[in-house]
Amino acid sequence: MKKLLLGLSLVLIASLLAGCSQEGKKGEISGEVKVAGSSTVYPITIAMAEEFNKLYPNVVVSVQSTGTGGGFKNFFIPGYADINDASRPIKPEELEAAKKNGVEPIEFLVAYDALTVIVNPENDWVDCLSFEELRKIWGPEATGNITKWSDVNPEWPDEEMHLYGPTSASGTFDFFTEVVIGKEDAHRKDYHGTEEDNTIIQAVERDRYAMGYLGLAYYLENKDKVKAVKIKNEKGVCVEPSIETARSGEYPLTRPLYIYVNKESLKKPAVREFVRFYLENLDSGIVEEIGYVPVDEKTKEENLKKFEEALKELGIE
Image 1 (tube, rainbow, N blue to C red):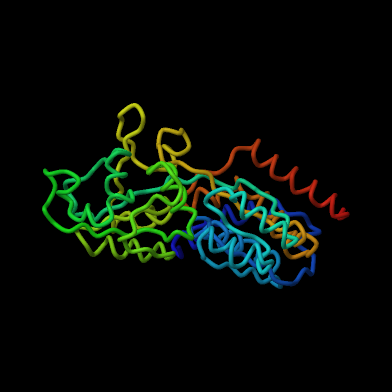
Image 2 (image 1 turned 180 degrees about the vertical axis):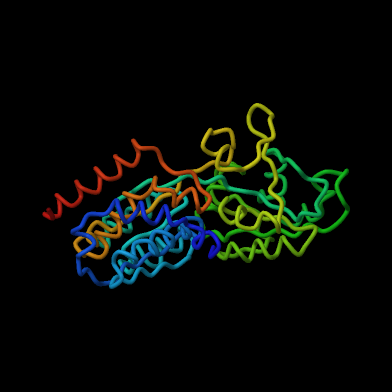
């Protein structure tokens, strides 16, 4: 994601600086903000952290890409992380486990993504896929049965299909299985699972018979290396994944992205100011520059209202 992060314009940076209070500029805040979770939300949080550090250089924002579920289970719920990036809503059982550990998650909607199915650029037989075809490739019944491209469509090559995607600890995995396949955890087992989206890109780039799926930002960063597959919507129209089609709702694999903040962590000035900065700059250009759809003004205001209410409940002015 370096290219994207370095690509933030001087005008954007100037506007961010101008938007911050004089008090914030002069503040001597220090400490650490610990973030885990979604690899999809990861580039947004990294970009926010880089801009935040220009104003608060004494704050260390550490961000781990662990997958949504992995972040919740291993870091956020036990209280080891202040924030969990998430490409799906928190599950009821995760929320219950968090509360048992004294962690009260506050949900903030931060962007929208267009989950993207990718193939090798030399793949000249697949340009558009229906949900039915995706289920045939990725569903649990495909394990050991759908091994060649020709098993899906006899007109496709009689060559072994190599599949790459996120692990079951990922929110991307959860969204894909629930929306595309139709039920939670219903996913073929014999594929190459990883929490490193760039690994999926590299694998598909070098293999003509490979397919994978990941967040839009990773595809946009590598669109010269892999090809995005159009997805057929309910009207039977093949729609290409993009910021525009996700914003309009035309693309059928559009999904919300979140951050979850441990309410207790807001007592720490470093965490409090980072979350404030994050929410105030959701429409500043950072989210779109990364490759996602920014939230609208109403959502931004709702996020900030929720944030301020949490501070009041904690007795923080």
